[in-house]
Length: 374
Image 1 (cartoon, rainbow, N blue to C red):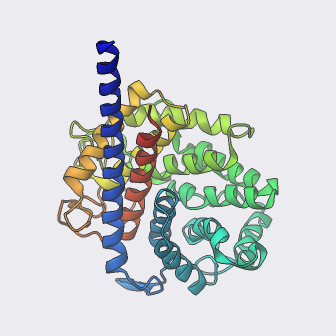
Image 2 (image 1 turned 60 degrees about the horizontal axis):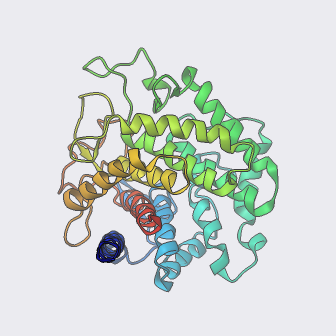
């Protein structure tokens, strides 16, 4: 009897510690987001990094992906007000209008669709320009627009979301054909199926080599694809005929990322090369996002991946998050490990928004994992 009571006590204590840990994760996510919302209080204000750009550009759109993920676990009207003001200001339209075929311009559409239940207007009225944009691109008959792997995250989930919203399969079919082109044909195929890593674009496929003779696999670039697969699989569900195809790539990528985590829990900007090895937040956050989601949805073994995620979160919290919520070790914009260097605890990247977005995606999904653990 005493033994049973003791076991029950320790089980209760364990659950309490787990809940406390989950709440701590949420608290850190809130702190990072509060810092960002305070610094960029006007969501309509354009950015100015060398030149003026509207706040519907991809860097800000990624932030809103993270904000909507935070809203899902921590519903607050101020989050919605902030995002709705942004969407209304940009007239729920892709950056550069309805004729753009640039995936970066379309990224904002993911948040537009997520905001629909809170907008108080008809879906067809709010999304007419976004839908027109996707229809225009599909009408070209081309599937070769995604020439860089970042584009897969910027646009592929949007097409999946539009399919789910409208019930029109053409959107998802187009996205899958475009994904396959990037994966198998662009530059001879950007996905290295022999090891689970992605080349950023055709300029980095062999014979390109880093100074140490190794291939170039960029942490954030690979993280973009990983996040895209999560977001698409989450939308279409396990019964969809494309799910198994995406799952296969997701599992191979998970193994690859698990194999190159730093001892301190973060990932280098360069995943397998010693060139530009160093702590980096955005790739780490996207890997945490994907692995946490994979465990929650039964795709990844907890025994293998939970220690990886625990280690990653501990490093993000202790090594990257400042007391005021500023995020260190965020690599600036670019297309390979050399971009935005040096990446340090105190260095401010050219754009802060996508770093916060990636961090919120990883933190909120890890929070969900902790809450769902038995």
